[in-house]
Amino acid sequence: MVTGMTLSARLTDAGLSLQTLGLFALVGMPYALKVLWAPCIENVPLPFLGSRLGQRRSWAFLAQMGILLMYAAMAFVGPESNILMFAGLCFGLTFFSATQDVALDGYRIAWLEKHHQAWGAGVFVNCYRLALMVSGAGAVMASDVVGWFWVMLGLMVFQTLGVAAILALGPQDVSPESYQGSWFFRAFFKPLQGLKQHKHWIAFLAIVLTFRLPDAYLASMNYRFLHDMGFSKAEIASVVQIYGLSAAFVGGALGGLIMQRLGLYRALVIAAVLQMASNLSYAWIDGPFLSQLIVVMTIEELASGIATASFLGFLALLCQKDVAATQYALLTSLVALTRMLVSSTSGVVAAELGWDAFFVVSALMGLVGLGLVVAVRPVFGRLMRD
Figure 1 (cartoon, rainbow, N blue to C red):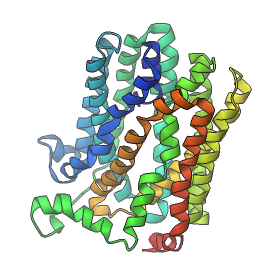
Figure 2: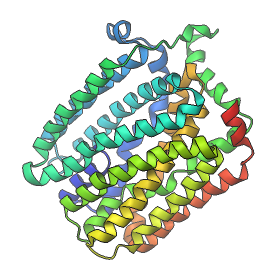
Figure 3: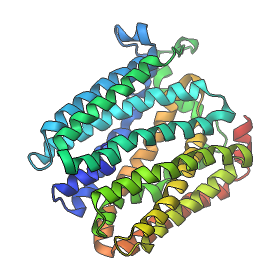
């Protein structure tokens, strides 16, 4: 989470340029590469931990320990003193965070039935947003008072709650032995074959790659835009992440409800349209006016909650439970890879074209995903039933 708005605030405080902020999106590359070690999370038992916590929980626990270590190091190394080392620590943080995601995503998908996947994704995202209050809004606001050193140490304390939550989860069997064949083939190729069993898997893959592009392009620049408009750290943190959290909660719940009541196709169409509208709404902000910011954040977070729950529900429906962690990691890795590569150009576009044109460009990206969803409309009903 510290690689999102909190990282943007940290780099802005260090006086780095728009172009550098955009390039720092690349520290999230482990989210795009996590599929490379996802099979190990389902097939390689960890010594001591594996027999006590279970396959996926033990890997999640190990990842939490790594996150704590990165927080400790980032308290002593900042972008002002050593930007390359700081970037390396951010990369390490995303590596352990991505590993945790693989383990917990696999755990969640295997636990839930198909008709509960969107609800589960919504709850998962809402819990993420609750944590984001601490590592996002809380960290940004506290940095003005106590400085970034104490902020990072404070995040270590809160991170221990995640460790406790993992220890509180029940055990879950993965049972990889049920598949005949070599370990390597079972771990790496069976999940790929499973995804290809969908008749329209190429179209689904195209949707996976393009659907969340509008949100991805905006995410790395929204803090800098609001900063340039004259909003203070406290205003950005309180409105964007504390007030916005309530709208995001509602959006996440609505995403699950829409998918359950209206079906996967309508949920994705509604989400795609709302994503584009929320990006365009940023162009309405023309100064440090809280009323404008509140309206835009309401639209943004409602749209984001609906889009995230619907999209993650769609990804979960593509996965098979026995290899859910690897398949889901592959799909989200592709999402992250596209996100990182596209977002790395966002600073250049904002600097060259200006903010209004930037928001238009980011919104137009949503037409690709929307067009693909509409083009394969008949297959979504079958995906829910199969």
